[in-house]
Image (cartoon, rainbow, N blue to C red; front, side, top):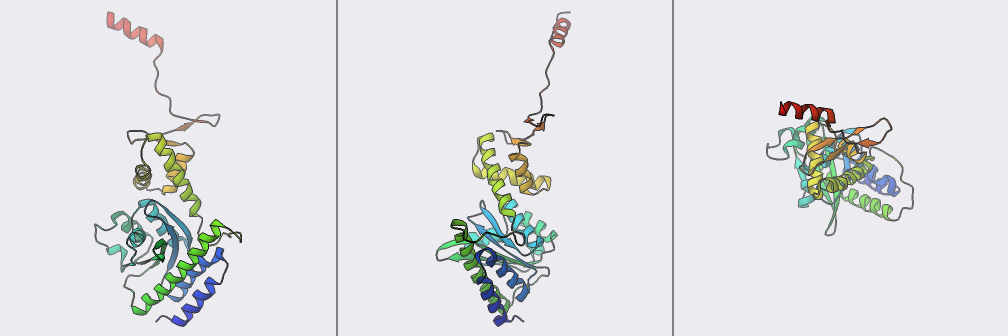
Length: 272
């Protein structure tokens, strides 16, 4: 049973916190008063642009990062359609629906996933992503409570965005909301790949995501390699590793060169 009165009070208290803490407080209230294991809030402008605002723990943060890295999942669908996406068991999702994300999310221990778009009028701002470690649909009272939390999350997100435009309170580092810097590095790497391979932003981001998936690494790790010039993308779409010289500057691996003596010897063999 969901205590609607207790949840409403907790959400009200969360929104009374300063803008730096309100979003995380809303997520914690959702986890405390609803049958949820974790929750996160993400600012979005589509599959190409996502920034984690906060998460209640490493599990929620990992799920958020997976959706950004892979460019698919219930968060992307909820934001794109403007409708809640309620998944009773992510481990049992049809094969054609988020195939990469579903398998990776199940490995985190998540089963039920419930994502709600955050909208202010006609503008979509992001999503509230809740999950729990057991499968099953939300009953009517649980769904009503989750919708209350989503409404509070929308107001908290508006405060968060306002504080970034005109900050009045220094933002404290709470929870697991450090992925914004990692996402900024992804965007920087995308721009570098566009220049290196003479390609478009979607194609460059797709190359980052493909590398992360094939190498079983986070997209932020791949982006860091690009930004620090440890790897680059060639115009033909292939990756090239860049090695460091003893002096600390980066340069591409040297190509094999032939000595003049070798050329002379080869020419002599050809004439003999």
